[in-house]
Image: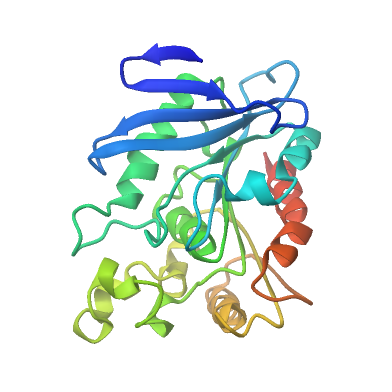
Length: 269
């Protein structure tokens, strides 16, 4: 383990990566007022001119920063594509947003204001938006699309697998009221974080967008959310890729399709 600073520790997660290094980054978060950890996969080989392109991979509800690399072979695809991966922790129900009612849940400020700069300071990365993408599943799909809409200066591409893309349809689920207050008392606040209502920010943003969902995704009803975002982007004239697959809200589905997302981001870097 290498000591980087009094507030940052990086350790190698031995045996977890196919060829490169899977690193565990510990640091102090001012936004969350606690010690935090996220993981980074650095591909094998020489750093490309200008640094590694970076894909941020966001986990879903009930998950954490280890989900993607524990359950899928996403590092192998990243190795193939020459893409560095960052796995932030969004909390089990943090929703990758700054809560107006819970000061301890400032997940957008944490990810955008702390994790991104820390990654770029610590690793040899590309720091232009065209070399940085964001992707997530379920709650993380919401995070990927919403954060790209709010920060198009930071992300050149955004993608979602089975994303919860219209949170206003889920007013009593997944601790959303604890993050945003009761829906009926703060509809505009909910809409300010909902991908369907943020879609107009993509009109002049030049962010590449790809989202998909399983047609059997009826428990979370992410398929309806995806179709609503598709229709809104079409109405606005924003280019996008939308795909419907056989599958449900499961790791089998996400494991099968994450490679498509990594390769799609890599093609645009």
